[in-house]
Structure formats: C-alpha cells, structure tokens
Image (cartoon, rainbow, N blue to C red):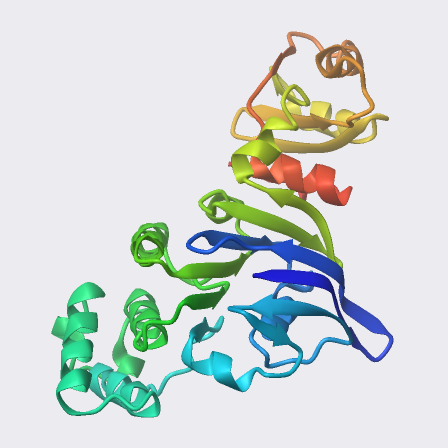
Amino acid sequence: METHGLTRMFGTKTAVDKVDLKITKGTVYGLLGPNGSGKTTAMRMLLGLLKPTAGEALVLGTRLPGNAEPLKRHIGYMTQGFTHYRDLTVLENLGFIADIHDFGGRRKRARIKELLDTYDLAAQADKFAGEMSGGQRQRLALAATVLHRPELLFLDEPTAAVDPETRRSFWEQLFDLVEGGTTIIVSTHLMDEAERCHQIAILDQGRKRAEGAPRDLMARVQGRVIEVSGPDLRSVRRHLSTTTGILSVAQVGSRLRVLVAPETDDPQATVAAAVAEFAEIQTQPTRPNLEDVFVLATGERVAERTA
C-alpha cells in the first residue's frame, strides 16, 4: 500500500497535509499522534470513505480516489467506539454481520463458531452486547470486523478504553492475524502501543513528521536523553524547563527525564552545567523511548508526567 501527497481539507483547515506512506503487506503499521493530528482522516481516505482534496493512494491494487466499492469485501474497519447493536446478543450481532457479507447456512454457522472460540466469546454467546464489559465488547467488535477474513484491517484507536491486561491480549490477537497474512493499520496516541508496531508514522497537525521502525527511531535519539536524580526535583525541573537547549523535562518517579536538542554537542555536560547550582544532583544518559522521539519529531514539549 502506498500514498502520494495525500491531502484533505475541510474548508480552510488542512486535516492531512501531503502525506506519503508505504506500508508492507503482513505487518502492523501504526499512525501515532495526538487527537486532531489527522490519523482518522487519513484512515477514512484509505478506506475510500472520504475523498482526498489532493494526492492519491494505492490500496490492495486499487487506486483511490475512485473505485472504492470493490475494496469493501477485502478490508475491515474497527472504529473508536463500539458500533454494533447493544440490544442484540453476541450471536445475533455476528449473525447480522455474516448476512451482510453473504455468509449463509453451514458456512455462516462454522465461521461464527470459529470466532466465538478464537475470541473467547462462547460463554457470552447469548448475552446482550450492552451488558458486556468493555473488554468483551472489544473482542466482539474485532470478531465482527474480521468475520469476512479481510486482507487489510483498519483499527482506529481500538484500545483507548480498556485495561492493560485486555490491551495485551488484544495485541496478541492482532499478531495472530498478521501471521495469517493480514495487513493491519492502527491509529493510536499511546506510546507503548505504538512500540508494538512493525513500522510507525508520527503525525502532527496533519503532517508526517517521522517514519520508521520504533527501534530505529529511538536509536536516532541515543545519547540525547539524560536522567537526573537528587533532592528537590520539582525546583530542578522548573529550572531545566526554562534552559536553552532543553526540549522537555518529565518527572518519572524519583527521577527526571531530560531531552536535549539535537544541535547540542554534549547533552550530559549541558544538563550537568544547568543544574550545577543544585546540591547532590546526579546526571547520566538513559535509554530513549518513543515519547522522546515524538518530542523531537514535532518540536513540542510533552506535558509534565509524574509516577
């Protein structure tokens, strides 16, 4: 899958701005960015649900815009919110989706049974969707989305409202799909979730700011993240936040994570000099994470974080 100069405007506002993507078959590709960064708009253009203002995309051999209708039987789309019928049971919801995709008789029953087993929904088969927990509804939504075995799966912030254990289980199910040959495009604003992807694109204000494997992107930041420890960290943080060359300062437990600008020759020396007036302060380089990559890519300061 590829996009070239993909652009979408709503009036005078540019939601997606000349975005180029290249997505390899059989991988998980993440669109990482805050709310309003253009992730959902980009997805909807790739789905053929929204016409680009400019640019084009090649999706499963089909050129967009135009010709989107044949794609419907080959793609799946799981939206942010639960969009299935809360007053129908799990079986009724899956049966309805099977009918939409022209599954009938024995094929329909076999596929629904397979999904109930795969997504651990057999015990909830006769339960109304509205009475299920968030994690159960998420599994039902995924089961319904993949019922027709799509080659390409779009997931729009699919784990925003579930607990960490459910999220881990959900991602294991995604990798099972990838192993079977499915290509998955997932949007998220969660850094730890983006790290699970094979490749990511960082979007901000509609533009692609960085792209690559998470490990490779983090390697480019190596040496620019300095850990600061010692007493009175709140005062140290306030001081560092106003220091030239410091892009972000975030408190994590009893330490500060300090991200230094790329043009700084010696990041650790820069931070050490900045905190020299404080007593008993120690500094040392630490492993960068995807949040650091995001700050460098977008030029934005990450909001203060305490743990």
